[in-house]
Length: 125
Image (tube, rainbow, N blue to C red; front, top):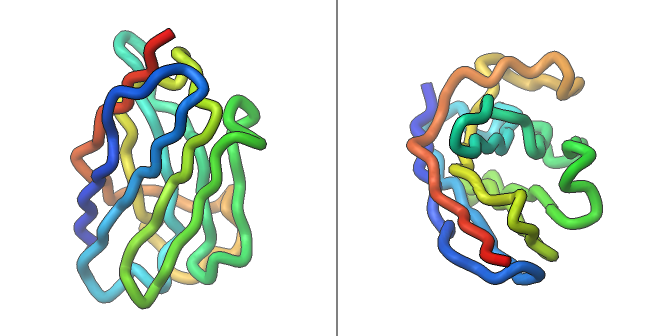
């Protein structure tokens, strides 16, 4: 089991940037695909980005492609989400999640079952 703590959220103007961090504890981080999800008020939680255990594969939601970048450092047990050109519609609580399975190569098969508490991102127009 991996425990996750997100940080880095805040209030930013449209067009600005934020970098979210997710610090993980537990021995399974380096073998787990990691993902970022978000949930806006009144909306379902939605996928934002994911990265394979090695960092060699990434995936993004169409709505954030070209603006957001996911990365990880297994030595630091940390995954980041760099968010640029933020828009008001990016406003949400952002959650970090870990794959239940080890060494998933195909991110479409990842089963994200461990979640952090979330960090609020608010983008003003």
